[in-house]
Amino acid sequence: MVQTFDYVVVGGGSGGCAVASRLSEDPATSVALLEAGGKGDNWVVTTPGALILMVSGKVNNWAFETVPQAGLNNRIGYQPRGKALGGSSAINAMVYIRGHRSDYDHWAALGNTGWSYDDVLPYFKRSEDNSEFDGDYHGRGGPLSVTRLQSDNPVQEIFLQAAREAQFRVRDDFNGAEQEGLGIYQVTQKNGERWSAARGYIHPFMTTRPNLKVETGAYATGLIFEGRRAVGVKYRRGNDVFEIRARREVVLALGAFQTPQLLMLSGVGDAEALGKLGIASVHHLPGVGKNLQDHPDFVFGFTSDAPYFAGLSFPGIGRILKGIVQYRRRRRGPMTSNVAECGGFLKSRPDLEVPDMQLHFCTGMIDDHGRKPAWNRVGYSCHVCLLRPRSRGSVWLHDADPMRAPAIDPNFFGDPADLEDMVAGFKETRRLLEAPALKAITTSDVFTAGVDSDEAIRDVLRRHVDTVYHPVGTCKMGTGDPMAVVDPSLKVHGLDGLRIADASIMPTLIGGNTNAPTIMIGEKAADIIKADARSA
Image (cartoon, rainbow, N blue to C red; front, side):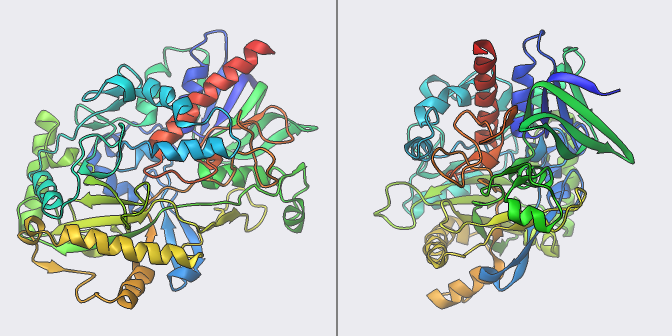
């Protein structure tokens, strides 16, 4: 028996959770949400400090890899993506950042009416339940809990002192009137636990809304079309194959890699390229899978004998065990840490109008996303990423097998100017890391000792840069652009009954972490869909 709903949302990540929850607020509207992973509600997800178990492996994680990156000495990069309800909000570092006002004003200037900063701010506020800030820029009472860390780590004050010593601004709120500066990040947590998009938008309603059907373990393999109208989805659960139908619309929210993958598998994309794979074209849309953008990221690493950091040494293990007890009793301490506790936004050159670099200061030694044994060296790390790279990559299919991971090419340093910007960002970050407050707790520089000349910096960047987990843009929003995939109402160009509500619609990468903006997209998508339904 084929089930039929008003709306079928494919992908239970940040955008999918938000749009499915908001559409199902109307008890007369039936909504199905398909998610390939699990429920995202066990201790590995809810315990913030357990994120390293997920990011570095395949627990709740698709753990994708890139094709060899020419700009990174032909290294193969790593692309962790959440595989559970909540999507990447179930495995990420929980940093709550919206981006810069100018990012959204730029979207609007490209012709995307309704997506300026003033247009999207109400959706950020609606989604938010902020325990610290209120007023013009923040919301209270929304599904997404945003708060300060409960790790109680004294290194936060050391970081702030170093920022002052290096003459950087110190900022309390990165999501207010100004962004530039360094400080302590707010996180998507509640009472010391991770508060994913699923916990805020879906878990509370799985048993209380009979009009909301959530299917986990449901791997979407193709869209069902009648002519140019999307009417349903095919999916697998184990060895079984199912179909589910949508009376009104199918909404794709599988993320920047898998939304274009599903479209191409379904015959929507570059017709010539799909034909070579034996996939019949339903609609020629050459922009599907193009315009991939991601933040290239470098990680400094330092050892330390200060008692603030975890690691696989005897003192480090002792702190972990003590932290577990503290977490179970009070939901405080190191197990509530998001690891990337501090950071902020800097300009690599003083003449820039907006910050072009973001830092994530981590309370552990991290190498290759935690996949290399740097954790046996106790210390700290500091990420620096380029916020608006010029390079553009792509996502495509290896073949017509829906169970095979897509080919992912971020094309890091494809534009040589990105490398030069990263050199400048490297130097500016080092100014912070050489401040007396941090030097006092440092015993060795693991990756960059003696790296002083520009050429030496370029070399270490090519050897170590990878993603900081913010892929966007592969189904970009636009009008009058032959490479645009959706219009400002998020409808797929040239097709009916099909929208996209995830980070793939971003025409350009925002200056910051992408989880909160993706939730905003889901919130706004639901409003657009409701308005269109009322006017139909």
